[in-house]
Image (cartoon, rainbow, N blue to C red; front, side):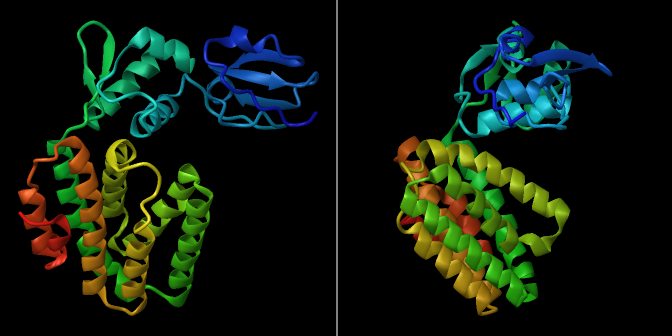
Length: 296
């Protein structure tokens, strides 16, 4: 049987039963969707409901009873703005929309609360954390402080293959920019930045990745529509500094890049704000780059 993709099925098992050659199975406390008259293809309810995984022969993945799966899906939805900042959503509605069990949903929400992405409500509702200039400035301070050090550690260890990989990400970003495909652009953009700081190690690298994800909420909402035209030049400046083996210049170019994005976000969130703390942080770890913030 040819692969089948199910989109926008977000209520329950019953929504799947109208499909030809689809049956339901409960095994080891996980609910699965079985595809084909002989059960040749199989996936879990969670992936089927979210419409993200093709239902192909032999595929068995996790479902909405899995705490990690529910956490990952909700976290991604919040970070991408699919669930609006400041929105209040009943837990029962979330459970129904995700096809998630109440217990794994509660555990996932506790994890998201520790991440600072949701706020507990006494009436069994979930409130998504709001966006603020104060919070964004703190994110920027943490990112610049960590990544300026990380890129200085990473650049001297970059091999020619690493530079070639970075050039490849640049080419991919340019392809998606020309096509006006911002979602496609994000993957090579993320990979580009993560490779530039990869030498710092997994613990700090994981913290940097989390901060980047949180910052993306702001960039998507307030960073302007699409990809900035001058971002390509900024990425080129970072890569050229790294390729020349100059870690200090690479750190300055990186900090300038983040400062220019911060100016856009502050301009939309709180135009009169003077990001003095961020200016001080940039001046400490990448002297000179603070000028990209403008006059204080």
